[in-house]
Length: 503
Ligand code: PHE
Image 1 (cartoon, protein in one colour):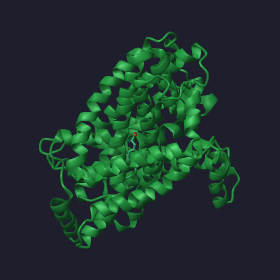
Image 2 (cartoon, rainbow, N blue to C red):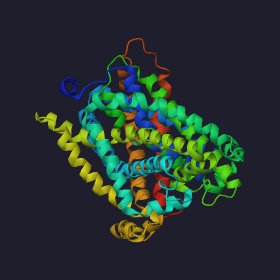
Image 3 (spheres, rainbow, N blue to C red):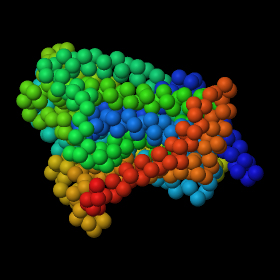
Image 4 (cartoon, helix red, strand yellow):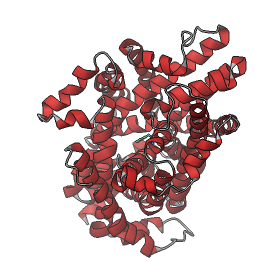
């Protein structure tokens, strides 16, 4: 009874103050906009590159089917059930689980702090190509792709400047609220991005030697599992999937809370999971063939396992050398602008989680939301958190050694120094590596064992004419498969973190 009344109280706030999606397509676009971003275009290719190509892809797809879909479905449904953000959702359904909501909020702060730094990198490249259009050599100082990247990341001031701009733009959109900002922006950006990606893929595939990259992605190479390690590939693929689908942070809970009962959540979850994966594979197809081609041509600094710089270095090379001239610069500019759009539709969703917590709290206390003021304060905190990421040059910068030693000092363990190359890695490891999987595992356990899959299905069935694919399937995912897989991932992470060498 008490729960019922809390639920309806939450719903009232929802209807009065929180807003709803104005259309089905708006919701889908915003969810796809949140999930498609740097995770797909920057993270997926470089992680696949360093983790055996095909082997990584196969594991990723399996994870999507058995964990990803269920987790998306779970988050949307919990959100629609309670009409609240992640902390409020758990508090309403079962107070003991409120801490799971906290994991999400902490992850959101960490993720956005490095995400906006990377978004700044993307912006720098867009500006670079734009300047090149007007005068050759002005955008990238006449440097080659590898050299330019190396010199840019160690320039702390420049990274911090672009980080500031990217974060500022994100906050302006978030201040506009759900309807004003989010929906309109994404509905335009996503389709345009896919068109330009296809053009770039065609260019990549027609470079000489590109076939090597295609083979790297699609030719079965089971020995990668023993060479690299099954758990390591599983763990990286899982982290990547949580990140890419924007899971474990309550983003999809919030988006679900803006949903009306007319929306078929089951279908939407599958559409969103598939769309996100298509974008990741497209990004792979854009980058891997180019890597294969440039490696065959002996271009310096380009390998599959190049790490976080892969997107920047390889794509720069594709445009400036592979295409070259005016067309190369023009496409380079368009490409990085669209990646920038994709990134910003994701960063707004993360920022939304950071502020929703404070906004919801005020609304509950009967105060005005103060959305703009809260956004501004939260952004200052994020800027401070992100500064070390801009200053250590991804581990190669001048301040690198000193900066990244801080966690080692904090934890008093020299091994920590080994686990992270840079601050970005550190934030990434805590969020994508630990808290997001853990949050998702607990959510699945919560659904499977505490409130019951039945409760979820009941909420799904409030949509008229909905057909549940298979109750058993969802139940098995929530109760067993997802928690077990995430537990292995978690062990793998702990193993790495402490250098135990179990796997
Ligand atoms: N999913 C987004 C991407 O792939 C990033 C993101 C992570 C957004 C976590 C929200 C939450 O780029």
